[in-house]
Image 1 (tube, rainbow, N blue to C red):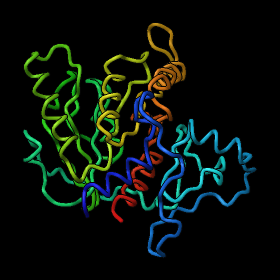
Image 2 (tube, rainbow, N blue to C red; image 1 turned 60 degrees about the vertical axis):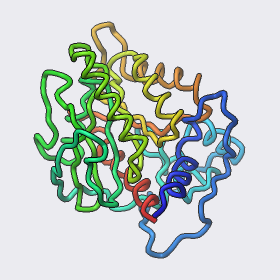
Image 3 (spheres, rainbow, N blue to C red; image 1 turned 30 degrees about the vertical axis):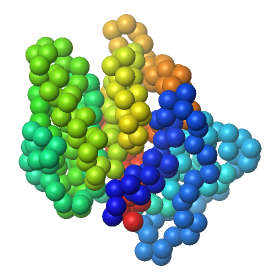
Length: 299
């Protein structure tokens, strides 16, 4: 599979939203195939009849808020197709999202040292202490698969975990760890960016954002860099079980504030989802979202 066609398709399906508002908007009509192979993975959504949004309202809503996956007509979206706690529509490419086995494949100091097979992969990125390792452990339902610590900044390498022998979950160094040496922070940034720009099997980035605190400039800067470089991204809000922080802000208020800031720079919202490693909130939904991106990528 050639890199450019794959990434071109993924860029178009996901995030015309990731282009800065100064860039010309992409046409909303998505160039996906109109029919699907009988072997294409499917996920049957509820058969319960749900009143459709009117065509005009649906199209407008989809253009500004919802993430529409491959094979889904924005005018056919119904409420029961939207994953709870997210703006993500479940489409026909969603398949088996169960994690049956996971294997740590190794750590890499440089992008060129990463596994060299053609399996698709998702990279987890986030500010130090955002709960990245805890979310990985929650997704695979195994304790200590990823390195967890009360001291943020422990992950300093590119760590590959092979899931179901078919795709990778990649744990990347956290950014913004204030107590790390400046030289180390720069090195982490350099090799992480090199991985993003040169990794041909990267399906997308899962950008973790702590919903228990108000939006951080460093997270917004990271999201903008990802968008400028045309890399698919899903915003994963973590710690959504927290009711209020010490300053009294609620999780929903912080998420809303982050999205308002995103609107200033993006034509359309990137896909986003609420999660909690403590309660399991959003776990199954996130895996379903990843399955539809992965299955489409693998065509």
